[in-house]
Image (cartoon, rainbow, N blue to C red; front, top):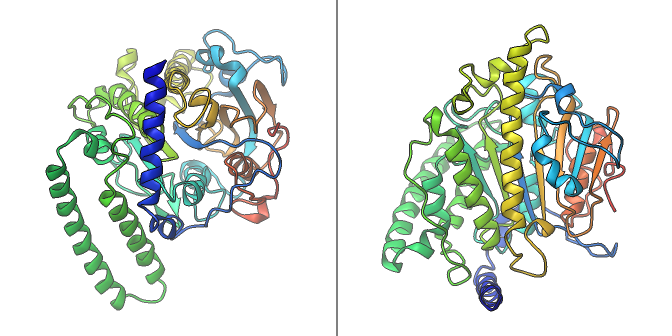
Length: 434
């Protein structure tokens, strides 16, 4: 216990020192996107300190996803997709029946899932407010998201209409986030200088191109320049040295090898929890593959790709069983993430990281076989420091998911009443707030 208290005090000293040394970050956090509004305690409730988004692709089969029972007495059937979450039932909000208005198919669902039809995703909106004094406003981690490059199928995070790409390489994430805790100062300075020189070169080239671009193209170039400036800032910040110890180095592996999919995901989850616990960032996301994700779940003894399995019809019970097995495996990974958060003491107060972190499992489609953004499943974990009710199965009956995005913003202490396209409705999702 004494060691844990010492670590907390050391964390606070480092975090306060880092905040004092970084006044310039506040002006960068919201560039290119919607500025985060002030956190407020006027309602007397707490709010989450951290946001963690967990994405899996290609929709679901509802009869194997939906719990049994009602709002408060729901249960997960043994062998169904969400059954690994049974130990966490009291911490969950299982949300059914949401609709992405104005969106359809894989691409539309991926684009709308976190943006609600706007130009900034909820994670970046929160980061613009909460991430101003952190070394990294947000961290985007991925598992084989970029084999097809950056496009609307492979990206879920947006700032001002521009992609915020995930990093699929755990070793890169480790060096970028924790390198200053694990390396000699001279080595870190040399790496930072090399990175900064490359970014300066790119900025010069884009600035020259902007002068020759037309009026319609300049906003896109400006968004890229802002993203580069944000990246440069995060690379030059030394990190919360002295606030926590570096986690164990990540095992060297090919992150694009199909059979490494589980190991890469496990490493990324561990890095996300460590980064949140060390105060490196208040916002993180983990994107498992992408919509139309072609990975093959060979580690489960399945030889057909995930996207292909997501289109198996009810006349093929063996194929449905294979798809349910990989979806249940994803639920096991979500449960692992909750276990890690719950096992980590909150460095800023009482309780665990899970007590003060809002975790969202998001998907881009409802029934993947229909290519519809209807009845899209969401699972929320954590009470957001008492802001949310938990232990609920909410059947929303066709409500716009922008209301859920408003609820997420409010659970993070922001005062939004609208998120995304205002034509899709205002206010939070009924029944979530405590």
